[in-house]
Image 1: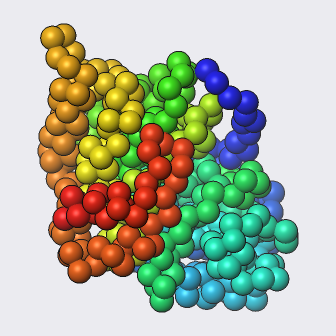
Image 2: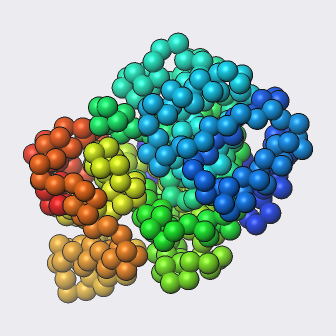
Length: 389
């Protein structure tokens, strides 16, 4: 294992069917003013909103609300939330929802007291907060992003058609606590469930497909991927299977809480491609990743052949006896494609509303990363996007 690193993850997790019972104890650690942040009406329909509000009232909190946070939180929505949190003098931001709501809460956290324009400071210049931030807590209702235990935040600038993620270096941006009840995920539509599953899988891949050393993180990643594939088969057929959904939820957290990235350079180009597509189409995040993944992996495969062969053997169970390395890899990617189709994932960006006339525009907003097996140039990006149509 090569590399020096520091690991710190201060988020306290409460997991299981009774995990919401711990919310009142956490609320006692913060001041009176709480801003409740959520998406549309789903948490009101399934009763989670009432449960959380009752706990907030019993805890003597003064509550303001930011509702209507969209799956791809926009810069305009961020500005709106900043004003609400500022006027309420928020002591705690409580996000109730999926990863986008958690991401949004972190963006509000670092922006309320920011003297500069937060878009410029955090999403253009990628600076760290120099102002006082507001603590964030999460009650998770959808899995996929891992935002409940990391310092990442993704915001979309609709005017510029750019979707940008910032992973903050300071662990204080991570949620102070997160409440994970797998039952809250059972009401998700199938499309959202499988989109989240692929988001989880790709988070692991983005860290796995880098480096050439014998790295403990890769063994952890392979185990997480095999667990996710196993549980996804069950959940796809039986969405209410609690054991499968709980394992998926737990895998999502470990896929992106920075643990399996340790000792790795990491790739993240599938996310850069997918986010660029998402900014143009406003498509669901996990589906944009699914649409570009296989074309990207086929494009970079020759530059990381050994790891792709290991992926085929250790994750997909491909028998390499008598096969060339290239054939073993292709068999692995074929098995991956079959799994994706079984889940019902989107397999090309055309299904998301993209067409050839958009390729140049989408390509111009991709921020290629340098930690994977090939540094992408403009021609590479356009070729991958065209292969994704």
